[in-house]
Each structure stands twice: as C-alpha cells, then as structure tokens.
Image (cartoon, rainbow, N blue to C red; front, side):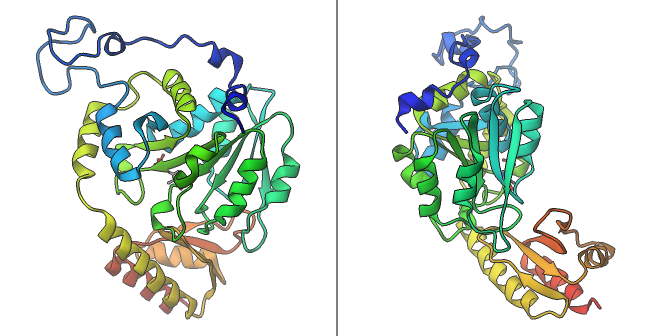
Length: 344
Ligand SMILES: *Cc1c(COP(=O)(O)O)cnc(C)c1O
C-alpha cells in the first residue's frame, strides 16, 4: 500500500485531532528555571514530569533494534499499542478486526472495549498460516488484522513470505505481534518495515529482555503512523522510574540468557516427547512449549501440588488437552520434568 492510502484508514476524528500540548512540548530546552509545568520545585528525582517523547530510552532501543526513533512508539506494555491500533483505525460499531485462533487474548478484549467487531480464523491442527481464509474473512470495513508470530499459545512462527504476501495483498493495517521474536530462528519483519507502509510490528521488553515488571511495549511503523500514535497516547504514558531502570538494565547483555533458554527449550522438548503421558510437543520458536498430554487437568493439578505452575490451555479450541509450559532456569525445568515423568 502507498502511505497516502494507509493514512486514509485513520478515523476522521483522529486525523483531525489537535493533541494536548505539554509544557515540555512547548519548551524543549534542558537548562533554566522551570516555572511552566506547576511542578513542585524541590528536587527528589521524580518531581518533574517525564519526557513525553521518551527520546533517550528510544535512542538506546534504536541502537540495538536498528530502527530509527521516529519509527518507534513506546507504550505501557504492548497492550497500550494494541488498544491504540483500535482507537486510531476502527470506528466503533462499524469497523471490524480479524485475527487467528488460538492466539493472544488481548486482541479480542481490546476490540470488545472499543466496540469493534472481532472475527477470527480457526487455525488447522498444525497451526499453519491461513492466508486464504484471512482474505476471505476481510471486507471493506476490516481495518486491522492481527498476526502473532511466533504465536502464543501455539509457539510456532509463520513463514515470513506467507505473511509478506498477505500484507502486500491486504488493504488495511496488518499488526504483526513479535513478542517472542528474540527466541525465534527466523528474522523479524523489522527487516522489511520500510517496504510495507501498512505494517505495524509489535515487540516488548517483557519477555527476552526480562523487564515485564517495567511495562514497556514497543510498536514500529512508518513515521507518519507513529506520529498519530504519539498524538493519541496519554502525554506522559511512560514514567521516569521505569525509563531510568530500563536504561540501566538494557546495558546488560541478554544474549547469553536467550541462548540458554533456547537450548533449554530443546532439552525440555526432547525430554517431554519421550514421556508416557505426553502425546505431542508442538514446535516452538518462543520461550514456552505447548504440550498435548493424555489428561491435561490431572497433570496440571499434579504439578500445582508440587508448586510448579504452568498454564492449562485446554479450553481453547485447537488446544484440547494441552499445557503451555514456560521455559525456566535449568533446575526449574528439571523439577518440572521429574514431576511429569513420574506422573501416572
Ligand atoms: C507477552 C505477550 C505480549 C507482551 O505484552 P506486554 O504488555 O508488552 O507485557 C504481547 N503479545 C503477546 C502475544 C504476548 O504473549
């Protein structure tokens, strides 16, 4: 899609929105006596409002993601970016969004909150990419398609070319949620972001970067789309404490942790496959395994009794009798494996 056509997808009220102008938008200098924001002038580290554009933290993220600051949005978790997609592109009661099932539950919740019809395609038994069905389900009021890759809870990535063909053919916004991309063998769609003006890529600092408690979600897209995100978001959506901790903690190298979790994923999958109660371990490009067992509820409760908590995903269609097991530290994985092995 051409950028002009993408910008026409923005709701009229949002396109015409005059955003709130903060004191820090009107005077961007760093030096001086700041008598413009009604702050308490006695310094304690947090008496000033944070930078509404988060330029320092974005600069750091820009370096390791290889994406310019103007192509980036920083939110209160990915959830904020998901909600903003609906608020920016979907007219309540009129437009619709399309996704796959099983997938991440927030796409539907955010649609419901925004009074946007939510449609989904049930994936097949191998969780393969349903390009034709997605296209068939979209109509002229479909503004958003959410694709989670690697997908939660199935764990698989969709082939890059299949996703790109769909993005090229679709006349709305495609949001590709890459929360688990750092554990995947295949490349991020960030590598092709400039070529697809209707693509929004979501990532997060919550998983591989180990900062779930700080609530920092990322969205990447064309600079014009990102400027719409910037004017619709709450002005000071990221606080100073979170930004400072993130700046500090992003200095540490997470590569070794990621490599260990990937090798643990293989070790745990190989061990589980050989166990009596395990029927299938689905291929995973994420930091969890979806595992089909002969009695998911029974095994879930046996694990709980030993204080090992996993997620029972059995009530999701397509995930009958499955547990979703996050890859932990090696000794945690050993303990989980021992319980599964001794069960029944
Ligand atoms: C964990 C997860 C996220 C991250 O959510 P945050 O709000 O950034 O913590 C996003 N998408 C999917 C599919 C996830 O599983």
